[in-house]
Image (cartoon, rainbow, N blue to C red; front, side, top):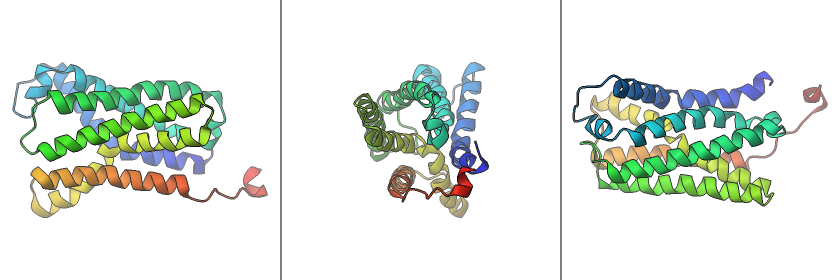
Length: 212
């Protein structure tokens, strides 16, 4: 790949770096027999969904970033990686729904945020399934649109770290209640807005110099 082709996957992986590191820390904590605290009690009591969610999200974030490289989309690698991504993406979406329903709400969350997690988790799963259905019909354009939207929702945790940052800097406190719900939803909406811009932008003009 050229340096230009590397920029988008590198940016997407960097955006997902904070939640991936947080997930690695959570897995390390669960694997070490942690002391049970109010912050981790739900994970210690039922670790399966969070473990599947973290592992699926790491693979989905990294592997999915390279699906945006035009050269790889013309290669059989794209199709093989896509099969893994469908499985990982659905794992992320459905375990997110599982945790939203099965786990007790943390102190700083509320029912509004729990409901939004159900909405966006369902939207992510639906986008991936619609993208899969489209490619099975050989509708590549529609497949690309739905898979991009699903990936944008899946990468929401990365953007949410940045929507939370100004509040944390300004107040020195973790946001809670409706404020936190708004900041979390903002992360998803920002990603979806960027995804729509990406899908609707004019196709780049290929010059003779670029082909050489």
